[in-house]
Each structure stands twice: as structure tokens, then as C-alpha cells.
Image (cartoon, rainbow, N blue to C red; front, side):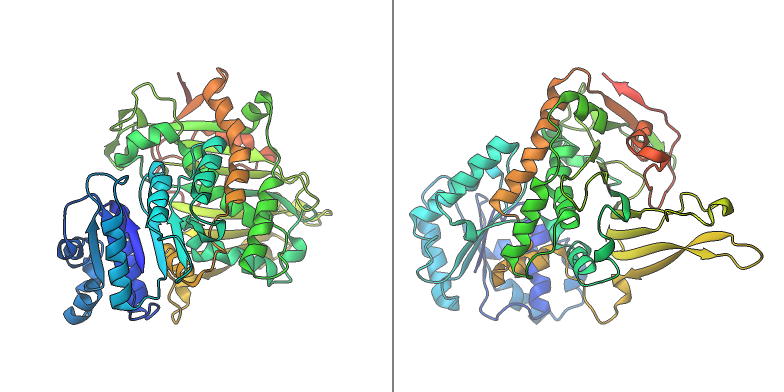
Length: 503
């Protein structure tokens, strides 16, 4: 049984129920599965079914093509329980409802609690579930899934871990990061550890530098109030992007066992060199904020004009960082990571830049800087691209880059699961591989904390403006040595803009 707290919220209707529907349609769920939505909204099970299934804008295209009986059969497996005016009230009625559904549907006492609520409620909900005996595993397994953000800094992350561990064992806690549910992120492990053409080259001897770009075309939209207290670095880098970094950096695990993989990810995060002094942080990081612009003839608001944002805010909507990893494999190999909103295209990709040959026979033939690249596209159009040099037909040895690519969309027989589908199914099966462990979260915050503290407290840290629809502040290229600059995937229409310091 899946019990969703915060079931009247946007995440349930937009992501969770569509994911459960797709799993059901794909025959990945047992016939006796049941979903119980829980929140403070006053509605009954029929109203809940109408809201998230029958009248859902997120499912309408799919259910329009299906047999109405099948849709109703799915909807009938969804129930709702009104928790009242607060999450810190008596849970006796909820416990009774869960036990009744467990008995009626013969779910064997196997329960997953999905907390689609603010993190401030995690410990409160966990305590109430514990007090009702719903966390004990003497009759079926019990698991709890919690959404990010998991903490606001290292101190709050530790406190949150300690709070959950008071009522649940670590093995029962599943910290979800939907980025790890993406097929191409998981394929990083396969690309590295199942191909002899990559793993021997996956080190400082052959790799010049690594860059990761996460770009979104939208601004903060309706999240201005939340985002102004968070910022791009805390919102994206600490969780999604450091998870990707850990998969790139990690050593080969002993086996594909979830704990073996997570052990190596923790070691990888701990090996990232922490920037302790302000001079190093200022030199190797940069933050920016989008300003108003005109894109395709349409006026786009700047960040400070967004609803809920302080008109004098210096919160970053763009963040870029250069860092190093202190182990044999990655010694002196720079990593460059950037994330931003209001950019030319929506894309997340990893670029592995291999070193040029030590003896460049064809350097005089205008191939300088045309290094081999392995590009792993996380989203959209998930796939892998390898760039290598080939001779142009004709006289001489003029070399150009050619592409060898693979896209998951080319696999006609394979259905690529949505991230939430994969992660929910893993939680049901007890597979923790793609979920963050407590020490993993804390290791990420340990690296991020000094940077955030410097940005927030040092007067020499600037927030640079960039026009909405461009690739961030112009001086972000200065982070990358040798004039390589960032790879800007799929450049769309952009506006000319310089950079300015936002005071």
C-alpha cells in the first residue's frame, strides 16, 4: 500500500499518480495494490479520484485513449483520508483506515509512506506514524520516502536525519532525487563499468576536464517566494548535480549490490576538495541572476520582477563552479558545473573532454582544440554522443570531427520509464540503489556549506546579471582555462548582452 501525505498538492497530481497509472498499465503492479491519499483538504475518495484521475489535466491525454472500464478500475484503487486541520493531530483514524485497507486488499502489512510535504513536517509525520505502531516491521515491511530539499545546510540535514532515525531505521528511509531515476543517469554506471573502451580511459591520464550543464528555459515562475530563500546552488547543485558528479567520480563497486554502489558514491563525494578559504571560493565560483530581456519579440521579466522575489535580491539563478577531486584517478582534473534558469534551451548533459594526443601529428591541419568528447545527454533526447576526428576526403590530411550517437528513442521495443515510475517501483521492490543515504546527503552538504556561507557573507562576492534567454554571465567562460569555454548545446535565439554587477 502506498500512502501519500500531501496528496492534494501539485506533485501528486502532476507526477505521482501518472507514474502509478503507467506502472499499473504496464503490469508492473500487483492486482491488490492500493493508494491512500492523505492531506488536510476536505474531500472524500470519489472527489480525490476525480481530481487526480478522471478530471486530471496530467492524465487526460492518456485516459482518452483507454477503455473507460480500465480507467475506472484503476481509479477504484485510490482512496482518500482527510487528516483534519493539521499534520500534528491524532492519527488514530488514519491508522484504522490503513489497517482496514490492508485487510480488505490483503497487502500483507507492506506500507510505503510518501511524504510530499514541506521537510518541516517530516519528523512530525514520522513520530505520529511511530506512535500508532505503523513503523514496526513485525507484520510486513515499512518504508518512508521523503522529497528534497533534504535540509537547508549541513546542520539542518543532520538534524533531519537524526529526527527520522528516531522513528525509522536508515534501511527504511528512501530519500528521493528524481534525477537519479532518469535512464541516462543510471546508464553512467553501465557506460563506465561494462565497456573496456571507456573504463581504462576514465582517469587523469586521458581526460583533460569534465563539464556538466543543467539549463532550464523557464524562470522561477510561481516559486519566487521559495526560490529567493534557496537559489540555484542550493536548489540544484547540492542534490541533482552532485549526485551526477558522484557517479562520474566513484570507483568501481565490488558488485551491483545497492549498498556497495552507495558506499562508493559516498567515498566519491568525500574526495571532492572542500574550498575552505574565501579567496579560493571567489576565484572558482560565480553566480548570476537573469534580468529582463526580449526573446522572439516577447518581453521577459527579470528575476527581481518575479512574484515573491525581493526587488533588491542578490539570490543566484545561475551558478558555476570549478573544483577538483583529491584521489589518484582524478588528481588535477578540473570539474566544471553550471546550472541556470531562463537560458536558451532546456538541457542537462555531461561532457567528458579527452586530452589531445601528446604528439599532434596533424596539428598544422587546423585540428587544434578538436578534442575527443563523450557527451552524455540526461535530458531531453536521452542518449550518448562520441566526437572523434576523421579525414576529410581530398588532398592532404584535413581533419574534421565526426559524430557517433545513440538515442534511447531509437529503441522501438524499449519503453523508457519516467523517473518517478522507476523510483517508485524500486522502493516497492526494496532497491535502494538510486536513493540517497544519510551519510551521502551530509557529504554533499559538507562541500556546499562553505561556498554558500561565503556567498552570503563576503562583500567581495558579486551576482552578475545576464539577459534572460542567454547562457549566463559572459565572464562564466573565464572559469575554464585554455580558452575552451563552455559547450553550449543547441544554441537557440539569444540576445546580445554584456554583464553587470547586481548591487
